[in-house]
Image (cartoon, rainbow, N blue to C red):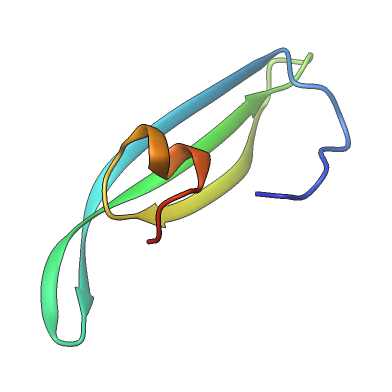
Amino acid sequence: MTRRLEEEYPYVILDARYERVREDGVGHSRAVLITLGIGWDGRRHVLAVELANCESATSWKGTCSA
């Protein structure tokens, strides 16, 4: 989340999907936060993937723990 991007992206897409994960033998649902950048050539680039407890403003800002 802190790396510098080497090119410009005219469009950035923020999305999340929920996946079942198993932690300490217990299964539950976690949000997978995905950031895509669309380059000038129209190609999609995955810029970041993070695991979070939920899809919220604090999760996207990186201020809550996963």
